Image 1 (spheres, rainbow, N blue to C red):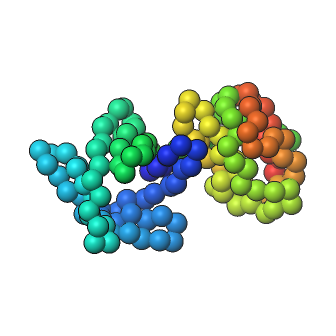
Image 2: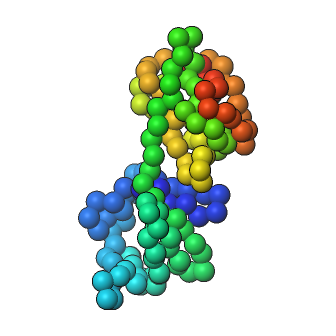
Length: 151
């Protein structure tokens, strides 16, 4: 799942009552009242919260901050015959995860694209070396435009 607060986001994998954040594992226990989670107990601390589900997203209010939790999306950009990756939808480039000359593996995140208030990881469909990067962070892109060339 992806947790979003303001402009920051973090991919979190939940395994029972363990949250995996990159190489860090945190054990927690959900406290419930009337079937709803009202707090999380973690590392000896009880953290009150309120959560409301809206479709695929859960809005969480905790410590005067609002977080959105949603399924992480992983979209493969469509390759063109020339070896470039094209945007699967219109959006804004949030992060470019590679640089020209980098070697990439099949399935590696190349670009994070924001569309419809969700972040989408654009994955390399094959191994190769990054050539031209057509956009920088913050740029708006249309569907079908070249994002990155994989040679």
